[in-house]
Image (tube, rainbow, N blue to C red; front, side):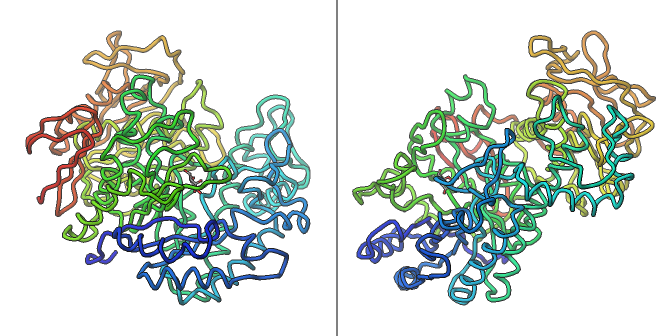
Amino acid sequence: MSMTMQRTLGTCYYPEHWPEEMWKEDASRMSKAGLTWVRIGEFAWSKLEPKPGELDFGWLDRAMDVLQKADLQVVLGTPTATPPRWMLDKHPDMLAVDASGNPRKFGSRRHYCFSHPGYREESKRITKLLAERYGKRVAAWQTDNEYGCHDTVISYSEPARFAFQQWLKEQYGTVKALNKAWGNVFWSMEYDDFSQIELPNLTVTEPNPAHSHAFRRFSSDQVVTFNRIQADEIRLHSSAPISHNYMGRITDFDHFDVGNDLDFATWDSYPLGFLEDRVGASPEQQRAYAKQGDPDFQAFHHDLYRTVGQGRWWVMEQQPGPVNWAPYNPAPLPGMVRLWSWEAFAHGAETVNYFRWRQASFAQEQMHSGLLRPDNQDAPAMAEVIKVAQELKDAPAVEPPFAQVALVFDYKADWAWSVQPHGLDLSYFDLVFSYYKALRRNGLTVDIIAPNHKDFSQYKLTLVPGLIHFPSSLKKELGQLNSLIIYGPRTGARDKDFNITPPLPPSLPNIDVKVSYVESLRPDSPLELSNGGSVIAYTESLEGIAPIFLETKSKKTIAVKENNIIYCGSWLDDDGLDKLMSIACTEAKIPTQHMPEGVRVTQTRAEEFWFNYSQKEVETKYGSISPAGILRHAV
Ligand code: GAL
């Protein structure tokens, strides 16, 4: 990332939705508002190719002329999330199939299976045509749109079954080796040939977890390949950087793997929709933050996608007002659109793009706000966007946060937890997020890192919760560290084929501890810790010589510590985690500060930012911050 890169703003625009006469005025209003980027094209396939092979790029040429004349830089999306209707006549078996065996039909979007060879060719073909024509004109690319949106990574189609069998052959070589690795002797599940292996749906009871987990790995690899085909094609004709717009809490494919083929990451941030739909907040939290969003959920993804983008990332779609898709869709508290934008910049974003320019007056998203109302008047967010654009004029250049704490996140672990959770609602994402939230309640800035991370020299504390399959490369890296490491429950609990690792997990370097058995707990049966907080949901019985670090009031060992390693084999509630983090940070000599309710802080090497997500005026050591307020100062 260039240290002199300016923070910028943009919007998502659909010229194909509006009469051509409106484009010029739209472009000039964007530019007057201080926007410098515009993303277009990602759903426009039926307009670009109305009939198979009959191309119409004229309108897109003209739209780009108009936008570029207004000094807007264009991000062009490949339109592969919305194959036109005629595509199905060409490839009737291209639809994804759900777990009950039903095709997911035409009539909305993302109606394709990642494994369909014919559709992969079509996606390559349209990408090539766009890259040849616009490769030298556009400033950046987006592949497809939101892989995984609407649960579309996993498909039980025939093409997926065939591709899965090929994938298994590559992974295991012989069916005998597969039988052994999966433990297929159990329930006489042995196969004689790869061609007998079905996808793991519609079985009488749960399929072999090794089978399910392999299918999750395969499904992720299909997304990676689909994306790579487009990225490779674009690179043949364009040197503009390539991205994809990822989502909040979508873990069905390995974003680090997709990110390795791209130049930067982007993600789509809808804080109010997320709070209602996927944060997992209590009803009280939902009520208290309905108009602001969860104080940690956006930041978590900013920190995650910074790593997915290898340091370079944007918000490609920022919520500007009420959305249409959550159970309830309130309007943001005045000031929140500005706060969300600045929070992204505090976490190192280069650009924040608002979704969308003008609210649609037709089709599915009529109830989704934009920067303009359908009658072309400014919507409430516009004034906040203009304010951010003005503030950016004399703000420092793009700068990543400076973190002394690292938190490992692994997509494969998420699949493993969901394949065999062992307790209702036990989720890896929730576990990692609970660690993140505890760090932030203690005023810390955090890097979320991938399991193949190498350089830990900047970190005084590394957290590894729930990493079920603990790759040997990471084990080696962490085994050499002198700084403090906290391993959380289920770390190292299974090998990559979902078997318990002998002699017993977690087999960690520099600490003598074994998990003798595990239990999941009823929500009404927490175990109280001796000095505050409780164990909830899940607990392990620990043995070994490592000294006790945390225990319950009834003397059950919860965490042990030996050398620089803490192993915590239970799921802790917020109070328990706060306690764990504050003891650990004192030991690691990391200064902490207890944050007021709803207030969060992020540090870069140049600035410190305080954000008030609460609905109350809050006093801080730097003065008071109003609701939705931001406090920014140089460090
Ligand atoms: C995103 C998607 C956009 C739009 C938006 C509405 O998930 O990429 O196309 O549908 O949601 O909030």
